[in-house]
Length: 291
View 1 (tube, rainbow, N blue to C red):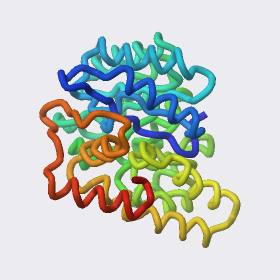
View 2 (view 1 turned 90 degrees about the horizontal axis):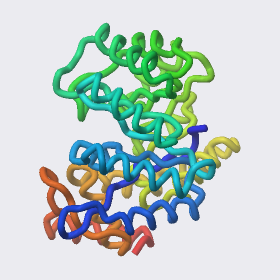
View 3 (view 1 turned 90 degrees about the vertical axis):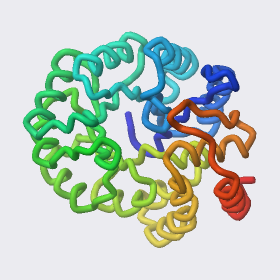
């Protein structure tokens, strides 16, 4: 179900700090029209730590109402509390989402045996498809390939979003999991090499802007047109890099604002981009024919 270009969707806000549900609905329509392969709702790029349970419930409900059985829907449900993660995972299940993306618990930095217990608890209790999310730059802890291998024995732990950017890590995981286990990149910058070691897609920040162009890299690779895939990937590299001019999702939301798709609003502790960086970002979008 989850392969190709899966967008890590932003959460648009209005001037009063509330979710802009009209803009959100239009973003969903945009990705349906662009034939984006899947949509992640309530992930890091969606400013998940600032969303209430009620807001997350509303985002899931709207997405399912509009897109169920049309676009695969992945729910960001991970927290640094196993019980809270289960509660959000059950919310996703009850609302009709297709699977849960569960980040490694941040701040409390559990050791490997604890990570195994965390994910196995969620798998057993939820009876819902779970994708592991490894992003140690955000969480302060990395799940070891051996732990992923152990967890892959659970039928409903179906894959991993590997966002370290390390091909060594990805290869070690690939060698320890069954062929059916979904290897999804969480790093746009290294998408092409990730595909070369057995990856089947990407959960992408840049896909908020250009999902079709990212899918083209994957399609070219899958068709054996490796030189063309490399050319396309390298053309997109400056834009991928620009998505991290400052903390994600500030750059990508600013891009969507410049594209007149959302308002330029964030929730604290994130704030608007400074003018110098915004002007630089605008120049990149113009150079890439996005504006």
